Length: 158
Ligand code: BEZ
Image (cartoon, rainbow, N blue to C red; front, side, top):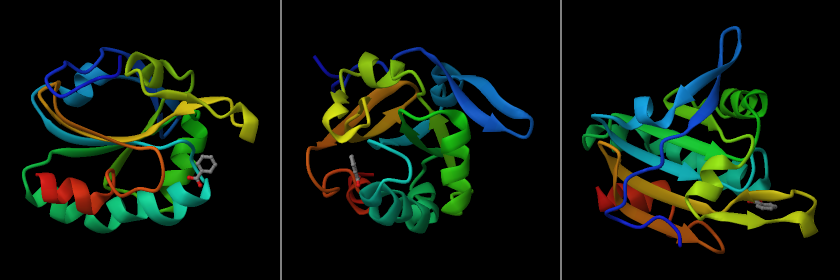
């Protein structure tokens, strides 16, 4: 069963690339007392995620935050070095690049997928959430494309 609106976001310790290397960060510290848009992608630097999905959130970050969102989080089953490099390459200064290197979040959310056939192994599905003080208010999942999980769609839902 995957996470649904009304559920509490899982408490996990993941990684973010800091100035001196990967740092632990808890989902509780990222989400407690905050309104957050979180989106998950199958892989950093993959074409759909790099050409469309993340750039949309980079472009719309100010508009999203103007609707009362404290933080925008992008996560993928990639290590903190890759997530940090991807955020830098995309000028994603306003987006928290959250590394789910072991796939713990994707699995806890029930939103993992096996992309072994493409050589990627177990990854996250493409999904987006609106989360308020750890409570999930909206979950959209895209099996293909980015229509339901785009920055524009999330902006319209806020
Ligand atoms: C993408 O371009 O978004 C993509 C490519 C391969 C696997 C998953 C996603």
